[in-house]
Each structure stands twice: as structure tokens, then as C-alpha cells.
Amino acid sequence: PMVSVHFFEKNKNAPPKRLLEHFYHVARDTGQLDGPLRGTVNWGYADAVVAEDIFEMIQFARHKLPEFKVIPVNSHPYFAEGGAVTELASTLDRAVHWLDALEEKGLQAGEADRFLFFSVSIGSNYFVEIAKLRALRLLWANAMRAYGVGYPVMPPVEVHFAPASQTDDPHGNMIRATVQSMAAVIGGADRLTVLPSDAFKGQGTDFSRRIARNVQHILSLESHFDWVADPASGSYFVENLTEKLAVAAWEVFQE
Image 1 (cartoon, rainbow, N blue to C red):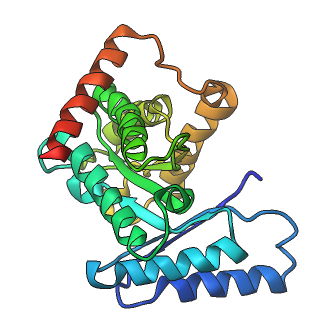
Image 2: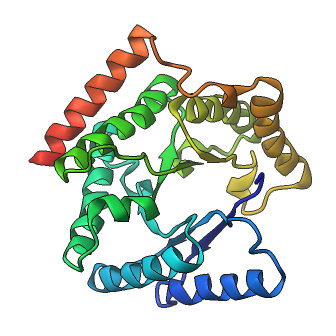
């Protein structure tokens, strides 16, 4: 399928499972269940209830929407905390927190991994952002090995532009969007949200939204960035930077 469905629940008091159930019932009643429905549910959460909420959502998704990812690991709060190393270490710590909580309820890490996804902010430092996304994959593979998962599958990684990377100059943002999008795709993003160049004003214009869509179209349909699994593989500079970020983040994570 060319289109997937992605929910973002901002109301921390709204049970996300109800949203997922409602979506399933609408899809069922409109005859949309012939093929697998893919998507994510990204939601605000409190640690006190997260394990129970996520466990219930996984149980529902496993039987009704097996291609949906319902365990969000949001790295956005960590983007400006102290550089890419801190961001990676904090993101990994958050993901492991979910896995540990679910293991206490009897759900093994390998099974929980099927329903997890990462949501990452990306800035304008081209090579660092490429290496950061690649390092996240190395870190997750290492974490899964620690849980005894022999052949882990990397969860999907969705990428959004970091608000701090946007300025009050829409023309500069428009140019920067191309660089940020290239970094995200080369780094291995599975889903990319290109921000309209005037989004800082609160609402993009028809023109800016069209340009934002066209950035993705050009990268995919004309430049064929999606034809290569790891375009940066073999680049000494990127490989070296990826390894340095991964090693440093793993050390911080273990502290």
C-alpha cells in the first residue's frame, strides 16, 4: 500500500486504545480490512499508567491490526539537551524503559519490538543527522542482543524537522528542508514529515505545503532515494562518525 495511517494523540487524558478501536470499527464497517492496514499511534503518556495502556493496545493490535505500531519512542524532547550523543542515549533509555515495563507483564522484548516505533527530530547538521539515524539502528541492535533477541528487526523510524531548525525566513527554511530531507532518507528514515517553510507562523500556505510535498516526490520519484537501503554505506567519513556516535551514546546509556 502507498498510504498508511498515523495518529497523534495530544490529550494525555484520552485513552489511545479507544482511538485505535474506533479506527478499527470504521475500517471494518467501510470494508477496508481486505488487506493489512499499516500505521502508528503516537500519544502522550504518563509513566504511572503507560505499561498497562501499552499492554492493552498491543493485545488489541495483535489480533485486530497486526501491522500497526503502538509503542511510541519519542526522541523530540531530547533533541536540544546536549547534542546527538545525549539524544541517542536518552532515546535508547526510553525505549528500554518500555521493554522492561512490558517484560514485567509477561511480554518478551522480541514480541514488544514488533509494535514499537521511533519518532525522531532532525536538525540541519547534514552529516551528523545522517550518522545519528544510522547510529540509532546500531544501538537498537545492541540492545536487542542484550535481551537475547537473536535476529532483531529494526522498528520503523519516523522523522520530523526539529522546531529549533526553523527560522523566521521561509526562503531559508525551504532550502534547508531539502538538506534535512536528504539527511533523513540517507540516514534510513522509514517515514518523513517535511515541514512547510512558513509553518513557524502557525499555518502553512497552499504554496508552502505544495513545495513540502514536492520535496518528498522529487527525492522518491525522480532522485530514487528509496531504491538504496543504505546510501551512506562504505563512506569512511559517515561510517566513522556513525560508529563514534554509537559508541559514545552506548557508554552514556550504561552510566
